[in-house]
Image (cartoon, rainbow, N blue to C red; front, top):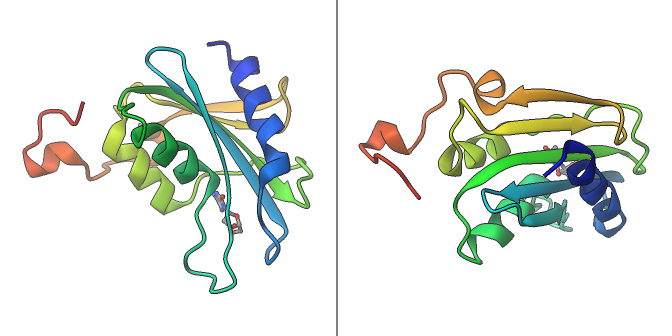
Length: 141
Ligand code: THU
């Protein structure tokens, strides 16, 4: 899966963001080891704390359909959906990535457009992360 295609899938999903309280619209596109793409948007709530981030929406959609091996995620977001900044994943989303991804190889693309993006490994965004191996799990796959 080419980076531009994954970013385009995230940008195309931004229209579904449900963010009536913050007006901060976020979307993500997650690619599995078999090159299937699962998209997600943020979903806010009048009670605030039930809000789900775009990244976790994408992961939970994929995991709930039996997918557990992932290569990369593209993330876009901004106030009113204007992509003039890079939108970094929150700590909770980084932790969810840690559950299902190899931090050394999983790629996080932060994009402003299909042409303008930054590339990180999960390990760069979550150094010394706590994950399944710390509880003696060899693999969660
Ligand atoms: N948000 C995401 O969807 N992903 C992130 O990584 C950062 C924050 C959402 C949650 C909330 O709906 C809005 O952005 C403002 O925090």
